[in-house]
Length: 215
Image 1 (tube, helix red, strand yellow):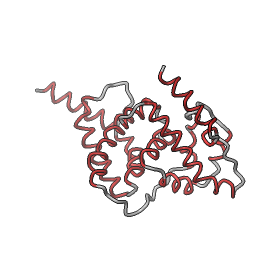
Image 2 (cartoon, one colour):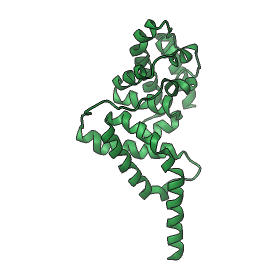
Image 3 (tube, rainbow, N blue to C red):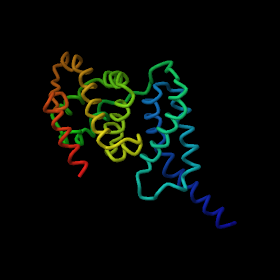
Image 4 (cartoon, rainbow, N blue to C red):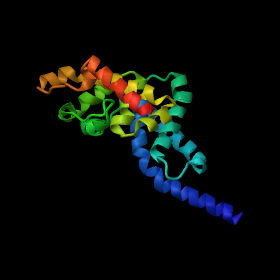
């Protein structure tokens, strides 16, 4: 019994040390899902309760953030999405333009570009508004990849979809996002000439990247 108590205490201490510092990032993800601060708080709270209960099954050395996101995504699908809750307001917390494009060097085309630098010049609220207009699956893939910097394999695990599907959604999501931001960029004299907007060329790059990922 003492050993069991000690093990439980150590696990609780490790959870507090490793998982709690990620709470703000999980809340940002919850906002992207629910688009409502109150629902986001409830979703994060439920996620952490489940994560604490399941923490013994977490494999040391793997990505804890991705593991937490997987629990949160499943919770959202099983509870909030099924309840078809409608957001009463847009999130007040902004994702910064810097965060959104900082990790875009691992794009679907595998390229960093001048367009990435150009996007950094756009106002935060413009990117946030555009991101909220994307279909849910595209919005979450873009969030996981470009805000959280997760790898394709990790996103595939979180969303329970094949890597090829993740790459396709990311390509389409970024393309839609940049399309929404075109007018704003044009007004500010910023060019958006990324391969994701280059029609057949962009599609060819995605197919090439997907073939490489499947090897």
